[in-house]
Length: 134
Image (cartoon, rainbow, N blue to C red; front, side, top):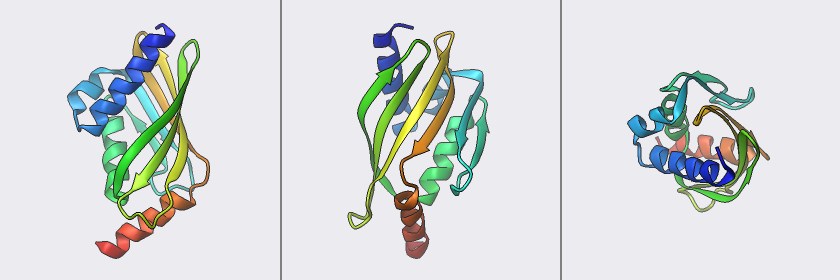
């Protein structure tokens, strides 16, 4: 994939998941796709297969009230990309979470996503805030 194709791919994947178009997002993933979330986060684990991203998304969105996931930058390599993101929560009193997501590609599809939170405290605070309101 060219750098331009990778940028367009990442934007399409974010758009599909944000719209809940799981058929489109699954078609963009390899059969052995995996998304990893780090230990220490409430959604820690490996989410595998074409429905792994959906399972992760549904778990995260069940834990926090996200109103926006803003991509500020995207760095592209030969078979990977790193997106710099800000996750904004419904409660404006909550600090946004800053993270990067590493994407790996194979044969024109995404085979791995690995998020890295700069500081997990804002995400954990948003989880606690949702527990209080539900």
